[in-house]
Amino acid sequence: MIQRAIEYDIGGERLLQLCSAEDLIIHKAVACRPQDLADMEGVLIRQKGRLDLDYVRGWLAEFAELLDKPEILGQFEALCRTA
Image (tube, rainbow, N blue to C red; front, side, top):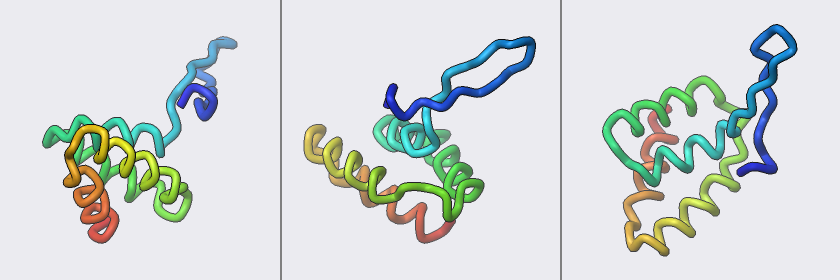
């Protein structure tokens, strides 16, 4: 995640390190609170066609297995279909 961070210029020669949209989705999917699901849907809509979905799916599969929560990947796929 750190290697994929994006620098964002907030003005006045100040840069802010932000996680990529893919990594944000991964974190939100693992947390899986109602607002996280809404946030994920918003990111999927705004970033449509620009996301590395294979990267997201790979990490979500890892977390789903590690946490014994197969629904993590299923919820992501459902959001992908509706977004």
